[in-house]
Image (cartoon, rainbow, N blue to C red; front, side, top):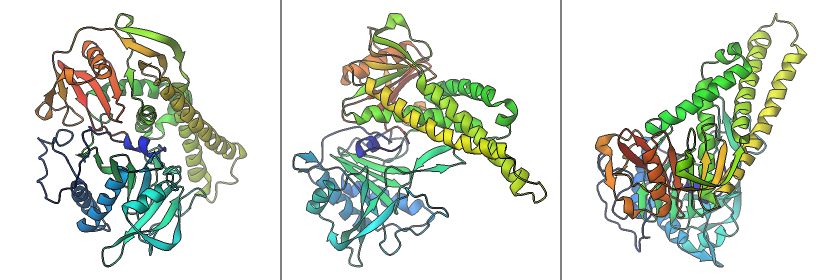
Length: 470
């Protein structure tokens, strides 16, 4: 999932609050698992982000990250730079922590032509607020990241520019999905009052409008929302199995999981694209829309995204099956004879078709997200087909209570009640629908970038914040 930093923010959204005036140097004890439901209620500062990132860096197999004092300097500069403007434009950039002596310590065996590279500046620049602000206007985060490091005296400096950092995903056959490759030891993205820190493809912590978040809810992996989505995924699995043939499908033992990841990641991309418009929006996922509860202003049946996902899953399976036959039947068997031309052609065509499907899905995602710019929600079914947009929820009944989840499963002990009337019209109407129809799942994107999910679990209406959307 590539895109600008505003879209990057949405990989895990966070609650908003007022921007801090001055970072605090006083350490506060980390909240317990029980009390840390989504974000801390107190205001957080760059010092809190530095402490959390340091803790996460130490968890890795290699502790090659900088110390806490250096991280504090880095995040203080980035935080205050994010509050500035340059020629009336907000400061938006990406910063990568990278050793100039070993910029690429573990290069892949086969480098893609589109893989990132780093170009050193003739003269290093000290990492200051002014330098970050100035460079941000020249370093579009969709195309570039600033390479930073520290000298022996703990002075942080900018030493180079990295290209191809946001647009080149790497394919993992085991996971069956495209992943964004992030160079360096860790990478921070900066936008107004937003700092997000990644280690590899994973977001480890964020500081957004004074709120620190380091636990993210993967609602598509477990819990009420995951169970609903799995019904739609299994229906897709059956269609793909029928399309490629049972023998071909069952020859690989991971295709159901690959298809599940493909379906959920595509839905996440739609949500992130909606967020990228900075207007807010809502997406309602239902098995069948209820006419008495919805007023659909623009009704249509746009099924192209679901069909493209099914086709992509099929060609990946067929291509993998052909490659397995080539390797096991010919390349690894010296007595197998010549490789049949039709088998080689089958593998090549599958690879070409996969590229075309990925391009089609990207276009479908942009199309569906653009519909969210109209007032009202976008209505999707389990095949990710658009049933209408500009939809208004007409239910008057309010939910008896709304609970904020403390984990993806919505465990009762980690939920706490929230005030229904403290939310805006978009949230309240989605709460009404999801409470009335338990099979529905609602996603609400606030103008500040927060993405929340809503679903009813038994007698409880649960809301999830800080979603895992990568």
